Length: 289
Image (cartoon, rainbow, N blue to C red):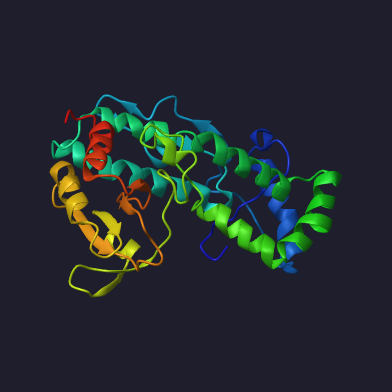
């Protein structure tokens, strides 16, 4: 309250609270919570009721207008999931938009943005709504679950690791999306096309050491065992230009060639001929060979 602002959870129907109800509640809470009896709350300069909504946009694209972040989906702010989901939207859309602007892909590629990201607009809000009810619920059952079950569980290291993994959204996969068709996206070895690739120690063509994720962002990466990538790299550059960084990984850790998207998700993997990679890129970019 040092800046003059305070917040109140009415633990009920907040829409029914007017200014006087809010003031009376604070007049009761302040001495109770602070132990001070010298504070007098006379009036309020401004009050507002905050309500939690759970709404996904019907579509993420209408012509040249594309929605991301809170414009595309809104839900409980618990756990910062809106921020993480919004950044995932931006990562997914940015590289696709760049290819279309450069003329390396048709506008049909932009439709895969909604296809890959919108399923999260139903999955993530469902979890945040459940967590909010458990955290803020004031019924006897909710209080029992919170104090007797959730708090002890939250102190367990395994639960904390799992909660961190879920909240980070590093588990998100696009295997069922339109860019991950084919046998390897369903039954192949992991990571499969559409999966997020974990950070790996790699080497650049000049032999210097680097990390996979340090090379992504605004570039693609072609990761392959030593000596096996030149033909695949040439085929990929025909479609994507020079925005591909060739990287090598120790031969004992990887046998396939991997093409990794700028958002760190696997676009393609295999030992097939470079022409197969070219056909897969043509399909993804909606460009005729």
